[in-house]
Length: 294
Image (cartoon, rainbow, N blue to C red; front, side, top):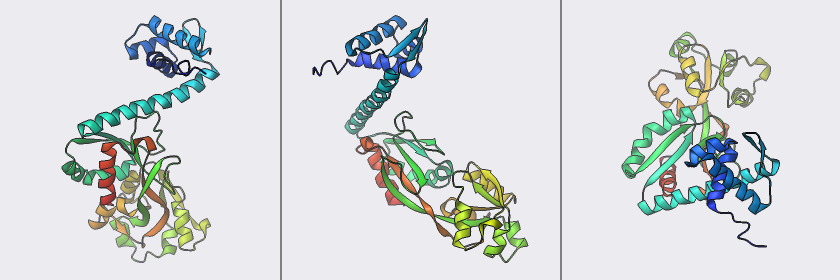
């Protein structure tokens, strides 16, 4: 087998990857600063070299074939690794760099950002770009270098560092605490229970922890963000079960009142990233700083 035949030139691969991503020669040409005919010629040259039909052409429209879609998936991942390797080399040479970090919105605003000035003091040449993510992170397409996530494990196939075991605490507004002094588990169970959409089992775990029947549960509104749930509790809409580290300031200032001892959930916070990013200087620095903070 001729390995040169299996290794098309980068110009052909870039033209194909852009055209496949957009399913448009015109948009690929704009992205690559080429003419539409140049992109078309490069894709055709790639097809001839490989002996494959990568696109179906219908008038001015192009659509990936099944084999084209398979080739795009593998090629996009490979080009992503090449770009990442280049960024790592540049960052290593300069001794600085930037980190594109995805994090849970409330964890980012309540825990990470108030401490991030300490990282910049230690590493003044580095930048951490913060992206909010509630659901999972696609490291192949998002351009994210690392993420802080919460779950029972880190993300599959990625390197993960356990940061903090999640402790949940029942919180109420100061007015509710004044009106009701005896917050037994049985009394809590009868209240309007607010919850966060990405942790729907939290109250079920709390009921099991206190050996209370789940049929007593009165679930109230669900919130996408923990910060919104915290505001709802302050407003007296109901009571919340939230990670203690996310309400530490409110508990200290008596903006919220904890009415039950914290208990360990089944989840933890993790710093997670693809193995290819492990030696990225900015990630190495941030990882060391973050683990020291925890």
